[in-house]
Length: 607
Image 1: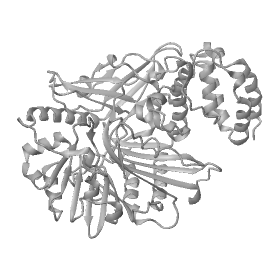
Image 2 (image 1 turned 90 degrees about the vertical axis):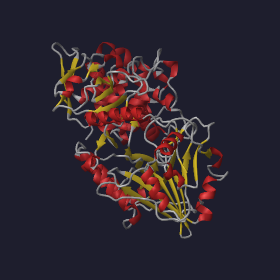
Image 3 (image 1 turned 30 degrees about the vertical axis):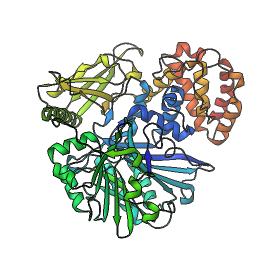
């Protein structure tokens, strides 16, 4: 188990996503409640380029590398998330649209919450790429309390890996059942992706995890509709660490411990329970919070149970709230001897979390404002209503030649039941937020027409802002993003146009070419010319063509993987046929075209 320091630890991007030595990334499935598109943009670079500890801000400032990573991985990464759980990005970026086919909202049976935080990744041998034999495949699992966001909170993570082989492993059965159930929760999931998830589930079913010496057993628990309920086992001692709590759940957990347990939570949560149901807290021997000198919130979910001479440690996504509520959750259980895996004393002692925690002292004054809580719930419920609506985008090119703007409309198949006290703003995330449109027509089953845009800005990602007409300064608007089905979008043409805008001068073209050929350049963009939104090129000045090993790399690609050269052909063709054609000669060096003609002739003769 690893406690994730919000300022220093980036386990999700380094340890979990970096391929092992002599292996390459094959495919991944991620389960998360919420996600941030900027965080997701950086994932391919960790999977492909071994970006290590390079800060995400540096990775996101290199659009040529981002473009390469997205084009190479998005058909092999499938991310399931809570409907309405996509956070709005800080700024517009045409590259976000290339994430569309990787994201799928999951709706559990009965309208419950999709709340797990899990990554399952498969890596294959880099030597021959043979993924058929178990020895050539490695499955990595990360069970966390952290969502795929940039949230600065204290979280917790458990990671394991192993090779699929032999008989099914009973301890993995519940996670396997959840993976197989995902297509039913996401009806829009294409058959090819569903098959990819199913194959990965079969690998998980047969994987024996490589465990450290102090862990005797490792069991995966999947909770939710069609799966099972979960609560900590009856124990001699119990420590509950949860950022969110409800009195009923605390009463129930305290009854399951032979001695008064310990609770670690957020001060605002304990303050609320102190005013609403103080008897629930009285059942706990100690109630602890992060020290005042730590500015960040607690988000970790941990349950330590001392049971019959063993320590059973549960880590994952379940809060100490209500059980059996229809939420989908995942927990990893580690079992070991108290002297090696730890006890309540060691977890909360000076060698554990003791130096970070202090006793909770109820503040003076009144409790939480019930009107404020009610208004927050109204906005949250409105978000859920809009997120569940049957929305669809329609796009078409305007009258005129190929340079005409595109028109995008958002339509609701039926009325949306929302209070007249609320206002709704809507905008495609590739446009600045000041292009927001009034969303009220959607509520009556109507449609919204956005401002004309070019093909690179057409996107399925639509942002919504919901607020009270009479603003409450204490309640922030709820803002979220939906990936909406679309009609009339030529996806390949759109994506080629995005590529042309990112690769818009000779240096950008040559760097992207080296990525395509497998000669990775993981350094920061030179000359400060690249920007995240593609508004400037990949560096000014000369192309450095003569200093690049293009002949060697192209020859290697021709011999080993001619498909890489076909991708190069498509890029050159787009640059010469699109709106960028007038600049194509400045983007593609003459020396390269002379070299390319030779390879293109060879490709035409390729059997």
